[in-house]
Amino acid sequence: MRRNDDLELNAYVDGELTAEEQAEILTAMQRNPELAKEACELNNLKNQLKLAYENPPGISSSSATPNKTPWYAIAASLVMLAMGLAGGFWMGTPANHSDRFVMLDADGRGQAPSTIDSPETRIVFHLTSDPEDVAAEELLDDIEDMLSSYKKDGNPLRVEIVSHGKGLSFMRERLSHHKARIHELATTYKNLTFVACKNTIDRLQVEQGVEIKIVPEAEVIDSGVSHVVKRQKEGWSYIRV
Amino acid sequence: MQTTKSTLLQKFGHNRKLRAQVCNQRERLYRIAWSWCHDQHLADDLVQETQAKALEKLDSLREESRLAVWLTRIMANIYRDHFRKNREETGLEIDVAIEDETPELSTDRMQLVQRTRDAIASLSDDQRQIISLVDLASFSYADTAKILDIPVGTVMSRLSRARNKLRERLERPIYHTKQKVVPIRKPS
Image: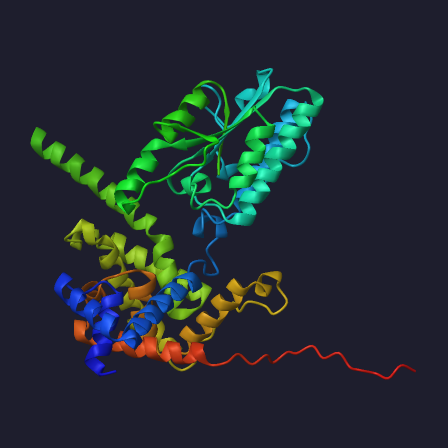
């Protein structure tokens, strides 16, 4: 590759070219697959570099990667916390991640779960990011354990999983890897509800130009955010995943 | 009089806001600094000096929207004038290598991170700075040129050379120096 071509291709992957120049490169790439491969490799290199410096020594992992803590670990510990409170005992240490989750009382103050005085335990999980498969499975396992344990003991429990933003893919007909599990859980436990945010669906439809289908078990509500706020006001424990 | 007072108060409030913004840039600056020197203490010192200098000459910031470029430029100057001179003799060392035996290393991700960091450490200071400003900090070529006080053309050619060298390094096969060999013995 000529030197100037090389510089231009670098500028292309760095988003430094005008629309016209970009069009030229794209046309050249269609003619020359080698060029397209080269651009792809440069792009991968950029991503690899970002990954390598995402979390350098000296920056605490909590501040460096606020969303990198496995969400199922947080969720699982919170499930344990909720179970412990409802049963009047602690099942374990309520996680060291207490600063990472939000659990508000009915008035939106503090972090004490409002369910403590309620005969029914009510928890809303707010899914805001796309979970990895293993993590999602583990969360579903934890929730199922909880539902089953409450059922066995005859304790009232309601659980809602609200997906919103990137978390919507968990409930998307085409993308979700958990459709069978969602179906199975929703059929077995009537006190478990899956909820999808219509605002996110509408936005994605406009952005991606495709029809977004949601698994039939999920109920579609206007706004995921408003819904979880409403739940908090009603005294539900809120767990952001 | 009233106008002067309110102007003063406005300026005071404005400066406080700017100061807070300078302080909030710590993590971003540290990431860049560490990618330049691969040394935790040096990166810390570099960021501290940068922030101290920035707070000292806050009035010289012309466009607030360009705070990140302004701060990084200050840091690049300090790095060039003080830190780099001292390190030229010793070369770049990675202060925190990921230990062989940590469980994290067993993951592909950590191996990839370590390999990439090693490859970047092998670049020249100039190349490492360019690549971290463009790829890590996502500065435009124009901003990178401004930060390093070099022409945009130099940014482009240095970046291209740096990436080629990096790819060459990363494409080399990995040789495992520590191999666990299980001796085969004849049953006695």
